[in-house]
Image 1 (tube, rainbow, N blue to C red):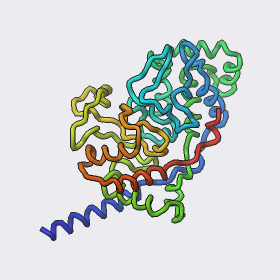
Image 2: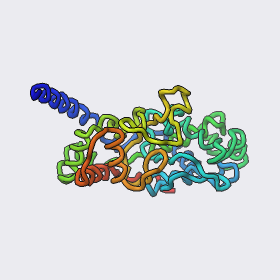
Image 3: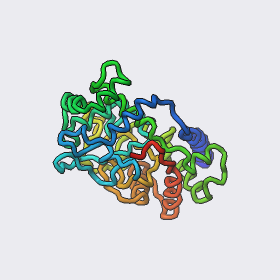
Image 4: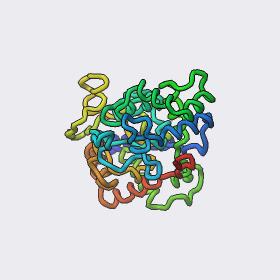
Length: 307
């Protein structure tokens, strides 16, 4: 019995070491088209893209407060309330898909979703394009960059290019990964070890510490959810309550948590995930260390995020 136990622990440690190498630092810079970024930034902050001229992208993605809006569910035109928590736009360029259910393949597709959602910006593609064409400044800006001027494709392309700049490098944990052993303290290091040993690293890895896979919500114990996740896209029974694994970058700034905003604190989220996703017990002391590690994933807000 002890022999098999030792082999199992050895295999687990080897797997943990492999998973540990899968977290990589966010780069300090990304290559972008600066003219498109400038235009995309203007569009991101301009409510002209909503049907009634009241809601901009920045309305639900506050770039000075974590890249989300801090609400359980966001509000769109006419005070309509959504039914799923707004994810942060920071580092979204590193996600393998966009939206909780992964229905958009990239940032360009993601931009168009809220634009025509009747609960969010409530516009039509033609309506948004016509609104921009009535603005001489936008007409000129688009013509300087795109041969065909103002189109819905160019609109999404410009905003997506701006969103590529919304990265948050130089988090303490990133500096630690780059060799600065003093960038994090012993409590954070213990939290990181727990993150590996408890199995969080299996889903939360890569440059975004998540955002690169799907997983069932409630693996070891069933969890009630009003949103069916991937099922709404694929209509496959096995995809019910399956969601894109969220990035943990800047997670200390993006409460409330989960797709339905059910938790207000990282402590309660860690306790829940350890029990329901991993089937493990975690002590209060271990939770505190894990939270400290998660807080070390908070990076620097880019200058481009200033309106």
